[in-house]
Image (cartoon, rainbow over all chains, first blue to last red; front, side, top):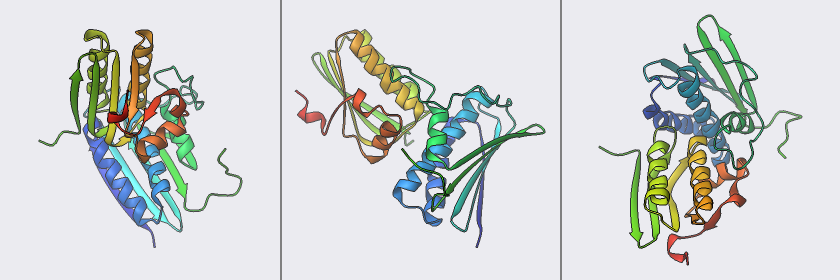
Length: 142
Length: 112
């Protein structure tokens, strides 16, 4: 049976903690163990922070929808916002030098989630993050 | 009102312990950054221990704050130490391959 929860917040970082708690409980109900839940929290929190920091450039009243869906061992989180379009290639997916202060957010999103997709739909940014209870074939950690 | 991150600083001469309770994220990391840089730059502390026992989550902005504290301390020949690192914090440090970059101890009390 599919489950779905939607949270609508403004782009104010004060809501990050609440979003993490929602995602943790949703992923627990979807059957993820503590390690899996931590990874989902990290991936979603970093994606949400990116929307606040980059799409809305720190402006705190932009609308954000966070939609969680779970079905058949798959958890999907969609983030929808109306901020600046994300320029593919503008964020490095590589881990920066240990002495660098920034640049780890996108790396964390991609290293914690199984699939990450971004698209622009009209005036909306849509980011889709997926994690599977069993990892799909070909995906390995190293 | 319940604060998202409580920061309590215990100073003893040139040594400080910064006790944290809450999450270090995009909202709270600027305040932590100010506290750490104040101890190292304005107060010239020779040793700063960041007690993370009460911290359940650190995001990439929190990691940036820790890296900045470490860099600032090194440039002043001061020590910047993490203590009480729990599973949630360790997970992010491991993912970003920064665990070995920091001096990490179990408890703030054992630092000599």
